[in-house]
Image 1 (tube, one colour):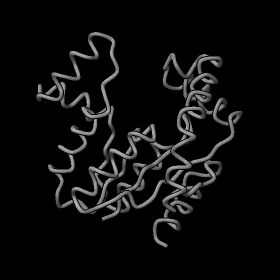
Image 2: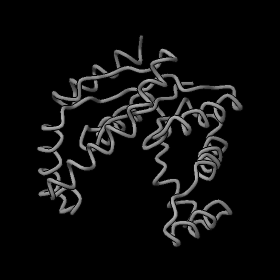
Image 3: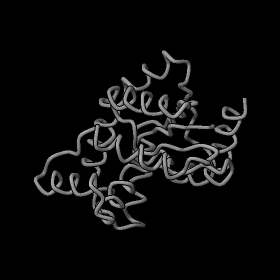
Length: 189
């Protein structure tokens, strides 16, 4: 089973590349944001618990998110693999994901990190903000703060997956196809 963690700061191209990887390797996309919204919409026990917390302005705890991911793994038992998007974001989440996957006799195959320098990310996000009208992509100081937040909070994950021999950095600057080819070369090794 091919289980990928796609990693990168805002504007690195994760959305574009994950679509191509999903199509190429027939993976199930596990976006924690989407799963959370879906569980709430379907009023599952975990969804109702998450909604109550969110309504109170409290972050949804890792165990609730892991529970939701576990449900998705169960629903897709015959999948060729999964691409994790937006999760894990901390070492504790990575450890919980490893434990969950081990219980299903599988593991994270690799973490693919799209690396793009901060100036390029800022340019891309400002451009995306013009095209999409997203407020969070239109303000340069907010963008720089999001990039710094990403760099500070997710750096330990690089160490976590490097220690397991699963971390692979990919240059996120180039054409969509060049980056996709580089990702596929790593996966196909």
